[in-house]
Length: 375
Image 1 (cartoon, rainbow, N blue to C red):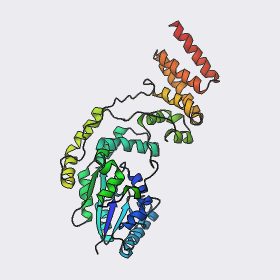
Image 2 (image 1 turned 45 degrees about the vertical axis):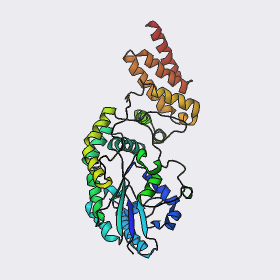
Image 3 (image 1 turned 180 degrees about the vertical axis):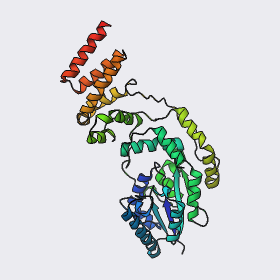
Image 4 (image 1 turned 135 degrees about the vertical axis):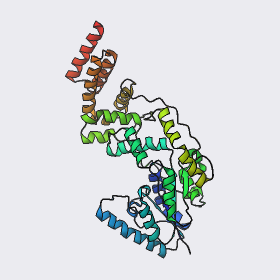
């Protein structure tokens, strides 16, 4: 009996972690239906240890991957299940030779499954992720050029490379957009993609977002405070903050995002025609309109941040009090030199709210009040 190995290759920022949690939570139900979430190379909820692109320079890990691939092949041969599933968002980074290694090592029909996200949304989400995870201070424009140079936005090349993994050039391509998901849900969409029918009541869904993101304005704020922080304070600022709502949505302007969409429209159309038999890979090819304000001080985001923590999360405010005070004092003096005394006073009032007993803050605030009345 010919067996099938589904290789979920992500891509990154397409709900991969949530899907991996879903696979693990429902592994027994999936197995009953003949699809086994493979045990070989499984670490926590994913199969990074079946992927050469994971910790490439670590000799021990690479040797472990060789062993795990062999174990996976044996698991498939010995199991009564007809289909298997592995998942890692590191798979898109495999070279042509490494993809063929997977084909040659595993005695089953290998079918890649890939979720593709519109390039502008992928860039925005990926930038937020790497800043949060690594506290990276590079600009989003630098990341955009790096991703373009590395071919990450070229979905034609990605799908064609992975089509080499089976003789029939099969690749299951899904667009990562809620409007196009089967039943409006990525979990149902994946189940539908591999041809299973499962009653909704039989499934278990992850209770929380396993990889919550932080929004653009919080990231801008964290980067502004970076030099004033200890490592622990940076960790606080680059993590989701309870009871704090940041309504900002984008780093790039509407026109910048639309330009990126247009740049890859032909690439996306080729993928759509070949794998989905339609002209458009994504239902919507218009960038969402949004005003992007680079200055978190003049647009009062900093004020919202301080007041939110003051009333809803004093513990976090106390943890990052020192860098906030240092930043506010320095910034207030910048606006003083620019004769923008309303902004100067606003910043000093925020500093007073955070540290009402600060002698220097009181002196600066009094001087600001006097100066304003003189004017």
